[in-house]
Every structure is written in structure tokens, then in C-alpha cells.
Length: 339
Image 1 (cartoon, rainbow, N blue to C red):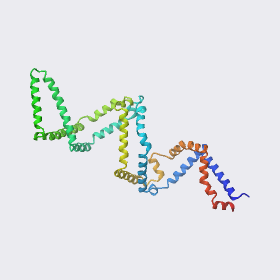
Image 2: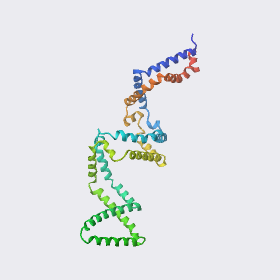
Image 3: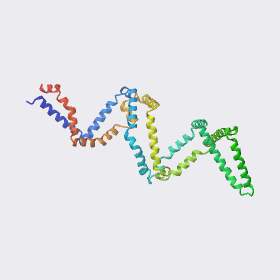
Image 4: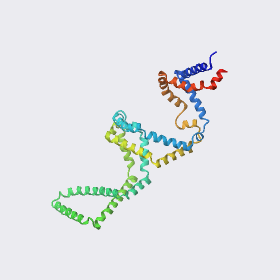
């Protein structure tokens, strides 16, 4: 009669062969379908809130953001992706911008932006608090006035005698400016800048509310909608795109480490639990746009190649044996076989 350990070895060999057969060919497809259905059936009895605690979910999300967001792979590939898109995807002449992006959502987005009067008012009000912005606005207004005056001067100088009078007036104005510097009159320059900024802000308000800005923006969109996607490269160079993407990535990476960003993530998790916490695990799949068939299809997309490779080099059989052998050689099993 065979010894218990010998019988255990034979049983172990038989089960390893059985499991290897389960992972081969059509049988693997049947096994995946069976196991996915079984897992979903069990998941339909498990309430999400009872399985996952809020604090656990917050920690998991934070870990994913930390590990994936700051991973070396993403850091290395950001610039490479930008260059590849510019060289290959953005160079496409077969598709037009209108075929890639629908007009309706673009129109809705612009309408919403131009209709956000509260945001516009707040931005314009805060701009008045910046002396540098006021100076820029003043220079902008001065530029408009100077261009207007220059155009009229060129016309006036064509009249005999007027050129000399204008030269005399310009000389007097320059002397007056020197006297004004550092005096009360010079102080008016700062107030003039603020006045120019307010006038500029008022013009922007009126333009956004009264002028057909939305229609003009859509007309601009329509001009580009029928052009090839490659036309977008006329707006920036490959170097510009690469640097912009890297700057945005740097902003994202440095932002994710801030305490405030953690508060935002925690709030999102709380909201998710409030909405989906009482769903079963299976009921959440349709909310995520997934089904059992989708899960099985993805397993079958990658599983066979991985398993076939592991079988070829003997690693799969070795792994199965290592998991089962402690059971078959345990004192309890050997005692049963001896009995």
C-alpha cells in the first residue's frame, strides 16, 4: 500500500494538472465567464459602505494620486507625449477640427463663459487693485490716443505752416512734462492710470454684455472648423507645446502635495460615499459604465497571453505547486490519507 506522503504527491500533481487545464484554450474562456458571474453574484450582496470605510477610501485615493501622479514614468513621458502628438497626431491632414470637436458643446461653453457676469465683475474689480495692471491699462489707452494723434498729425502736416506750429507745441509739452515729474502734477499720473484702468474695465464690461462677442467667437470657430487639424500647429511651435505641457505637469505635481488639495480629495470621497455608499458592489458597475461582460472581455484580452507565457517557461505550474504543496503535505492531510 502506498505511503500517505506518496499519495499526497500524486494528488498534488493531479490538481496542478487540473488547474493548468482550466487555464488553457476554450476552457479558460468558460472559467472566466463562470468566475466573473460568481464574483458579481457575491458582489450583489455586499453594500459598498459596509465593505469600504470612508477613511480607507480617502487614504487609497491619496496614495494613488501620490504614487501615480508623481511616478517616474509619467515624469519621463510627459514631454515625449507632447512631442509625439505634435509630430504625428497634430500633423494630420485627413480630419478637420469640426470633425474632431462638435460645434454644439463649443457654443455652449462660450455662451457660459460670456454669461458669467459675476466672475467677470470680480476679476475686473480685483484688477483695479493692481498698480501694475493700472499702468498697463494707462499705456494701452495712451497708445490708442497717440496712434490717433499721429494719424491726425500726418494729415495736418500736409497743410502749409502747420508742421512748425505742431513742433512748437510738442516742445512745450515736453518741457511741461519735465516740470511735472516729481510734483503734484506728476502725482496725477498714478490717478490717471487708475482712471484709464476703470475706463478700460468699463469698455470690457460693455463689450462682454452688449457686443456680439459670442457670435464673433463662434464665427472664429467656424473659420477653423473646416480646416485640417494640422492647421493648429500654426499657433504654436513644438517647443512651445512641450514647454507648456511640462509647466502644466509641474503645476499639477506641486499642487497635489499641498494640504488644501488633500482637503479637496477628501471632500470628493465624502460626496461619492453620500451618493453611492448604499449601492451594492455589483450595482455600482453600471454607474461606472461597466458590465460583467466588459470585465470578462478585458480579462480575456490580456489573460491568455500572460498565462501562455507563464506556462511555456514552467513558472505557472511552479507557482500553483508552491501554493498547494503546503496543504497536501500538512500533518492533517497526511493523517487523513493514513487513515
